[in-house]
Amino acid sequence: MEKNLFVIQLPANGSIYHKGFLDPGVRSVDIPQTNLSMPRFCVGPSTEYLWWYQQRDELSANRGPWHTSKDVLSAVGERELEWLQKFGCERYPREALYREFYGHQRVDPQVHIGYLLDYLKLAPHVVPRKYFCFRFGELTGIIDWEHATILPLFLQAKIPKHFQNDGDDESENFRPPKLRSNFDMLSDGEREYELEIYRRRQVHYFYVGFTDRHNKPHFNAMRKHNIVMRNRLYDTACRPWEGDNASLQAELISTLEQWEELAPEVVAPVQYSMEETKNCLARHAKQKEADLQMEQIRAFIGVNIEGWVPNGTFEEAKAKAEYIKNEMLNEVETEYERRELLEHWPFQDHEEID
Image 1 (cartoon, helix red, strand yellow):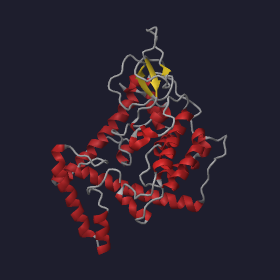
Image 2 (cartoon, one colour):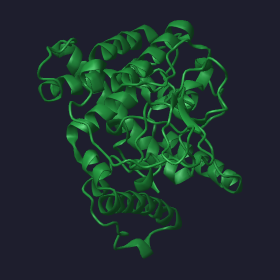
Image 3 (cartoon, rainbow, N blue to C red):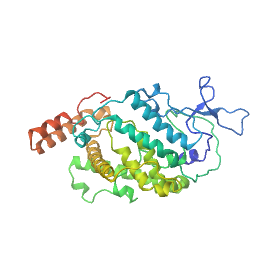
Image 4 (cartoon, rainbow, N blue to C red):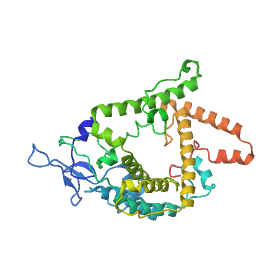
């Protein structure tokens, strides 16, 4: 299916609509079809979830359709910039383990606004100079494509988030997944944890393998380091700000370090001092380590990053979370550490906007 989608060449970036669905005056670009006298489908504004998340539907940002890759890259930065200017306020990082890295203080969105402005300076220059070409296909119907989005290939050249197992050495080196040799000797909890790791490695491994076999243009694009780097910068810039003032700057720093490869004909429009770079990368490394710890805990509990669990495992997940909390409380050495752990325990009840 993915191979078939990749061969369809579409006239703009955005989302696909039936021509009669859009209100009068909404911008759209017709999708040519060879076997019909009149086009049935068009590309219109993006329906990607992030364009509607937390009042983003109230913004005046350009939702598409976008005719160029530069427009796509700029639009997401402008959207997040406008949202912060309109709704942003100081807050604690959503990820509880990050709070230590900010001195347990509320984080100022103005810092992230500055990095978004830096991103918008870089964005026009990071579009690849070479594009990947495909033969033409034809769109004949749409089935349940809610929130699906058309983007340039260099922004789609990645493993889908539900399949990727980034950060795992076995997956990133494309080693065939296998269970630990002593798997049968592990406890029930340890076996469950190992099976989850095994499942993630399998999904990652087979997606990459079958993409190599059936969709070479996508596979080749995924392997290019400079494409991966552009992808990460875009993904981080369009991510809603939730109290993280390190990740976007870290990606900007990474982009600047490779600037000669990305845009050799242009002087980099943004620079950071050595001290600022060092401090940012140190904090970012701590956040990545915290992400890994939280991923392992969530895998053990059986909860996703939003806190959702299947109905059938809710009580079991609660018991596992309580078990981990008690184990961590047994390890603390001071009353202050105990209070901090209880106050910022990530699996306690809280408002979703926190």
